[in-house]
Image (cartoon, rainbow, N blue to C red; front, side):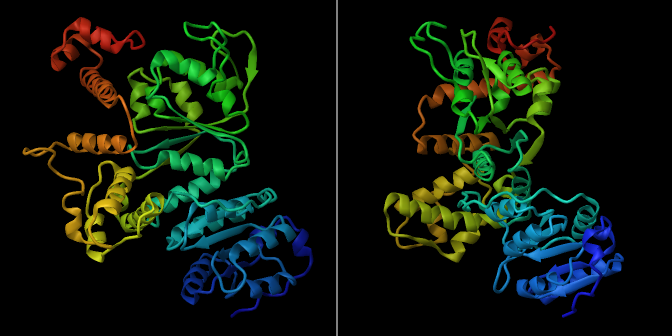
Length: 482
């Protein structure tokens, strides 16, 4: 192991030390140290290597590097301890944390303690060098916030797409920036929102969730902003809306793409000015709420069609976190399936079963159009009805996502519809038929209008509807040329 080079004390006070000094690598894996150190030396840096936190701590008593790269899991003290101690003693020292065990809590803890960046292993050397360049060129991060107890997050994944999701959550959770979460239905968008809240300074305040697609348009304004007594028929007393309920905390607006245009205008005013009126009220209410929104729709396309306000999208989309579909991270399916099966056994007070290797391999090859939610529901059913304590490949045949809904081959949207229906029914949903018909109408109308450039007569003919019927379905909020 190479000992760090002795330098004069003037280096501690020099604003240039982050550009000219050594880079220290702290990792117990000799191969990682060698590869990373070689790449850094080839890029013109001077490098010192350490196999343990203790070795680096002893060196820090004598000198301070320009940059510290540290693994999280190390023999003895862990990398987060070194991060915390080095940042407390030397606030200007940038630290990049590395780990092969990436999860939300660890990533967020690293950023909360003041890490300049977080590199999930295995990392691309070009990515690592770019991170080093940024860290050396940026000003020192602010002092670390007080460490809180690490929550156990429901988000799971070891695939590259999920590691990037965890990295983004860790980086933006502590800020008050609005976040837009995108991804297909069932990918876990609310779990990301809850993780952002749990890792933020607002975690002691309420987390309030509202699915804007599940509330009738005429009631949604009252749900969001509350109402005064007598504001409308049936409003017998004052009621607080979701913004008031979430005061000081986080408001999660799911399926934001379904919000009516008129209400989008009101939401924009709250986001821009931080104040609102209850429905029927005259009292101006100040709001301190972080808004996190989610959608499975293409909001940019809806903006182009005039169905979503561009200025509202800009307010919501300060940071975008995209959740990959389960088929795009198949390597995570066995991990998720094991967790879901164990959770189902605990929740239902059943003996804990396990998957045979063949069953896990079969699950990993399935598409799961309903994504993580569909996999979770499948595991619940298997926990109850699969025979024996070991779930085998043949146990999946009658319960796995099917390519056929009836005797005829099902189209992809029919498979997705079945997965959605099964998920909703498993969660005890009601009024499913009316909700499905409303969503079907909306999708067909959006698609036909887009294909025919908003021409209503052509759209009506394509859908087999009368012009008046089409106009009624579109509603007064949609403005299209004839």
